[in-house]
Image 1 (cartoon, rainbow, N blue to C red):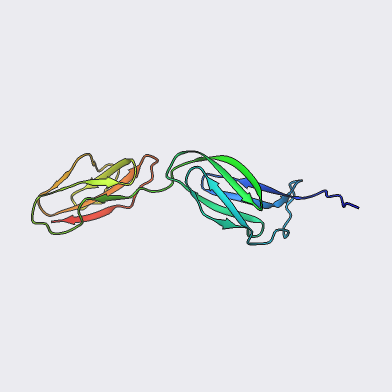
Image 2 (cartoon, rainbow, N blue to C red):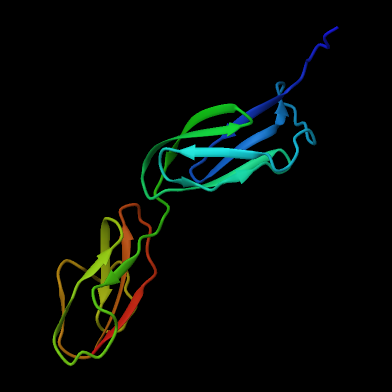
Length: 172
């Protein structure tokens, strides 16, 4: 004779802008039910924007970090033991840019034209007097000519407002 089932675990996908959670601790009535799901069950979570760290269930919950350098609507899919859930989440760029100069620090004994670049669209701010750059410093728009000892410091800010660490180059 079949046994009537009145309660079962429900797989839930809970997205946020940077943490994606998969929950197997609630039953179909919304009650918390602990201890029924063994640790270590693999969870495959994918996203159409960015990267998600791989994970497995611990105490009925799996959490992954979503990192993206793109802004938009991400479609998230979670698969646990052939059960599949999908949802969407607004993604904001949370990866700071990197910046660099075309020449390393060093002694050159000639006039040098220094170009600055960054890993994604945005603005580079710089100083040539050794002071730490801020968002009120010079904006990089063209080559910087170095004719004598100069300490070039710069930082980058991407379109989402993420900032790089400042870079320090001594060019002589």
